[in-house]
Length: 119
Image (tube, rainbow, N blue to C red; front, top):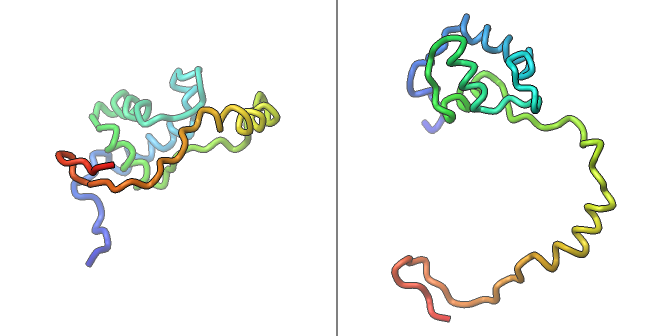
């Protein structure tokens, strides 16, 4: 009874349109003029759908559409060449403890926004 019965509304893209969109996404962002970084963002995909098919999607709708068709969040395959592990370890050991707020001591609190707890 709790299993999903699929999307609530009919998908705006036909199977042929999705196949074309999938092919364009696989070509990469550079093919569409996004030279600053090589990532498809939801905003860029939304713009691409508008340019190709003159169909409007919301950012959330684009995310659901891509997830429904097997696309997932991009994660870099490798670490950046510029990454300095020694500097990161030094920062974590020396700077972060000074910046990090100390843990709060226990005090009785209330979940009410209008009547905060005493203490």
